[in-house]
Amino acid sequence: MRSCLFVVVLSICGALSANPYVITFVNEIKPGPGSSEWIELHAEPDIYLGDVGGWTIVTHEGTAVIDQGNIVDTFYLVVGTWNTSGVFSLGDDADTLKLYNDDGSLVDWIIWGNVDWNNWGFYSPTKFTTPPTGASASRLNIMGPSCMPMWEDQYISWYFDLTPTPGTPNDDYGNIFGIVLGPGNACLENIRVTASGEMGHQSCLSCGEGMNSGDYWLFGLGEGMYLLSAYHPEYGAYQESVYVQAGETVHRNIVFGYNRVGERVSRRKPPLELKIVRDGVVLNLHKDRPLEIELIEPTGRVLSEIHRGILSRGVHFFAFPKIRKGVYLLRVSDEGGTIRTEKILIP
Picture (cartoon, rainbow, N blue to C red):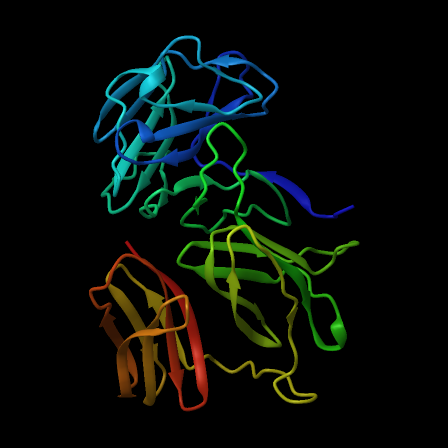
């Protein structure tokens, strides 16, 4: 039996009037031409019936009202032009979707593609990039073993499903799991592990003391190449490229060791400070040094060389080049190898 906790994570949620503890949310979105587009609603816990007739779906394209008699229960309710009145239409490339219940309360708020939005008090939307043609955006299954909330620092809680599943549970997401080990194969607890790629970004802590000490599990990943990384204050950084096929579960143990036999990583002050800002990267160097700054695709291909050469001590700003939106990696290196690698999102 796993020693990890089970958590429920939702960003925007609302209660059905049938029971104040029932959470209803948009579970899958399929943009497309005409009647091929739809959204799917689900509720947790799924043992109560709830009529969502009179609920409103608002997008940039128009406003639709769900017909009476549409029930969200143990199944997944698919909503489209056939069971709504008004204008049900989803932007193929970009849009904002807001779901309101019959008393006008906001239940869920989602944006995709390049859409400007303003933070609205307590509420903020979940976000994903434009789905590939024919694919749906599916919300990650909300239950999963973890030692902390999976979505504490995430940009998205969605993945793209190339075989949409209207009316049934979401599937086809990838996973990376394993054990975090130190010298002598000792299990290492509470180590932050991340997987960053164009189709998703996940983060968790390795489990603490117990039967499954050191276990980690990154789930909800779409198909693609990911940078699997972790950091230990004494043993340094771990990085590895891992390709996840659609729906594949990949086992990968993360093994830390000393820099050299019997020697631990120096605790000296890091050679630079790095901060990602909206349009570029800010570096603060503690001394003059030669640096190479590269923008890298999740596949590992160098997309752009931002700088190569000697930088003087002090603060420097480098603007990102004009590239298509997506998730990239920023790598800073010197003659001794990689110093820092950071995930960035180009909106």
